Image (cartoon, rainbow, N blue to C red; front, side, top):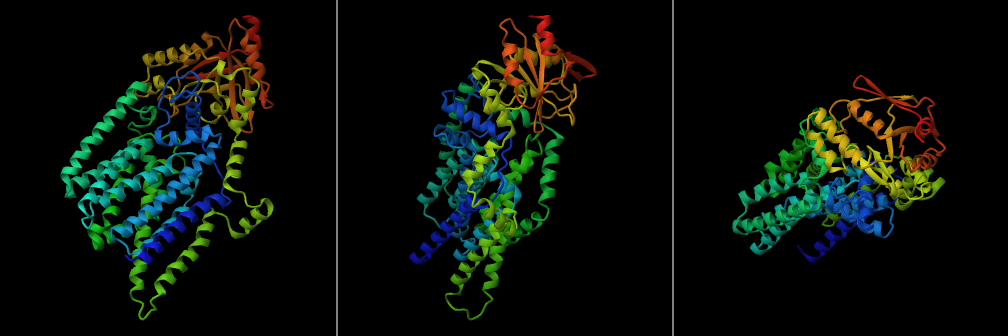
Length: 584
């Protein structure tokens, strides 16, 4: 490759990177941050406040964040007081752009596609991904999902380069080192990405001529992994994240989740399969990176058929299969375009470069239209609001979050939020804004409860659950009201997020009542419905907490109190005023 071609390739790669970044920075995309993303934000904030790996001021280490690497990447943003939604978006934008460029460069350097075709491949892949609603949403979601795309790409690209016999032996060994580093970092993004590493590692063991170097690095990798897990054992007294106990189990939910993904991408998958078969037959070893990518995506699909994926919005756990499907389609399209170009007779020497530049220019409106808005809508949005940049949209997403609004109100009306303990089953935005000690009733940030998921429902499980929760001495119990209307009766039901497989046992609520919980008020903050129960004690804190929690403008009270109906039994919580009169 001459210097001019090399420079042109880097210019086009850089332009594609900038184009993707500009799309997310300037396109009028709505930011919707799902509640679970605030789990990462809370862990990062506690890290900065001197409570590393703890979810709340109790300072109990728990691995409820799944992606250690993503959480640590958010720590500098918390340290600098940067909007965490903006920080997460910038991480994901960079990851997506790097993944596209890295895969394009791999296609170019392995000889799978020519320089021109590789550029077209990156353009088509960019356009396909940016028109995909799930991908766009995940970039701005606050989740780690798109960082997983870069992780999978790094594994596949480094393995493909390590197997490229056209490279010198020492270069291939360097790529072997890069492969193991990529696998380790991918494992820190999401543990299941070890499956992609294992598949690529098997290919290396089978095909690599540098077997001795591979075995040496495998031994070093095993030692590093052992050291990492010993570190986890020392910190968390556990080897697995709490999410593993909650999600990795035989469940029909996993099959349903994967089936829903297959249905949503039924128009893309046949094209991806055809492209993979054609390129594998024609390119053979040069298409190894495609085979590794496809195999890794299949392993992730199979893994999630054996899980109960919780909060799986925008197919976030299957982002690698989404990425792979579009990468295969883009590679097939780029190869076909290149083949068609060869049939053009007597074209000027500069035609190829002109064609590549024209494709680049034509891709711009295609990518811009991927925002899901029509040109008139974009024009109206710009005319009414100006160009609303990503930082402004991220700030609006924080300001308009109903959970954050409620938590901030309560925090402002409490003399010391960290001095009270709240029991609640959602460890997202509301605890992030409130900042109190939090007992996670569903176990994501509560290892003792997470371990109960594997137990069969029964008296022993219920007793352990009650013992742990009440040992934390909760002052406030928040209960989500799932009813369509305001009602004085709360009905228990089976919830896949709960450690109980059936409806919650009535014994739990009887224990809460015996412990001294009384009904204070209910909240209906623009559709966010909660029942607030407060603990009666000799210090008189219930009255002060009632003044803080129940002074919210959306608060109302049921004069007769609150009744819980579950397992065919009813447990009544009297109104706080009545309880205080009976037990001053």
